[in-house]
Image 1 (cartoon, one colour):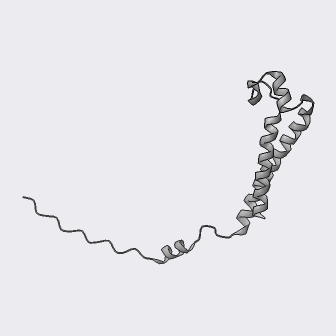
Image 2 (cartoon, helix red, strand yellow; image 1 turned 135 degrees about the horizontal axis):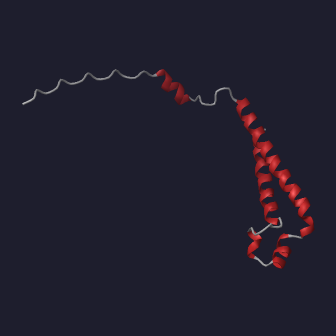
Image 3 (tube, helix red, strand yellow; image 1 turned 120 degrees about the horizontal axis):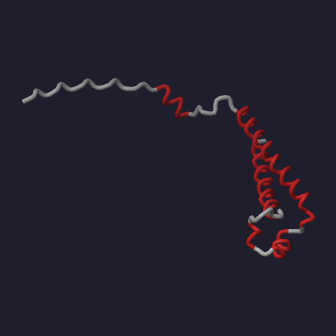
Length: 108
């Protein structure tokens, strides 16, 4: 389940990046470097702006929901994620006694 959620997050993120690059800029952005005619031809037609904007919001919200679901599946899968073999070995060991301080040398 965790792998499926992560795969969907990666797929939706890639699609979101593509949609953001296709959008008509409102005052600059990546296509602001090109002339207006070249930007329209390269990045799409202005009529598709509503659909692209709705898809952008949809992918953004779905990524947010998938990240939250991933968090819930990860936390419910294990009861104590911090325990490992090394932690158990370290918990069983005792620290050695501190060495006795050496007597101070007499002052001259």
